[in-house]
Length: 114
Image 1: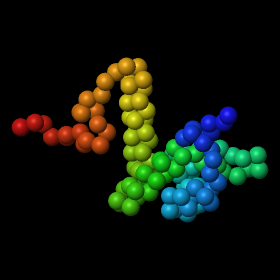
Image 2: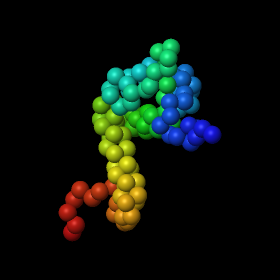
Image 3: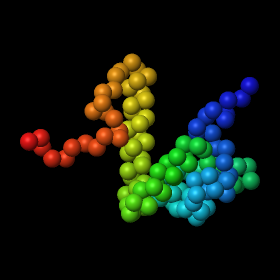
Image 4: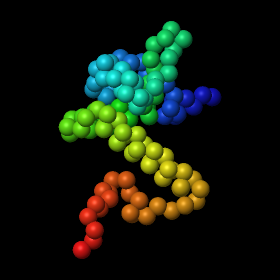
């Protein structure tokens, strides 16, 4: 039995379907490839295929662009967020514990405590 539909990294979506799913144009997805954020796999016919994980990254970039962040900065932010989430998953896999201070949704204070 195949579990490819459970695999977030399986390239299941064509460019058109992927763009429709996250509300962007195919050109936007191509621009993310050109920026180095995502590298879609190619079908035997040469068509781009996107995974759910890639679409999640693309959707996050779109959100940041809507907030006024430049594309290069948005791609860097999303890359760092993705790496941090992967590191947290690995810590938990190894039996480690994450604290509330490790929450990726909690901003890191930039000013010294008074």
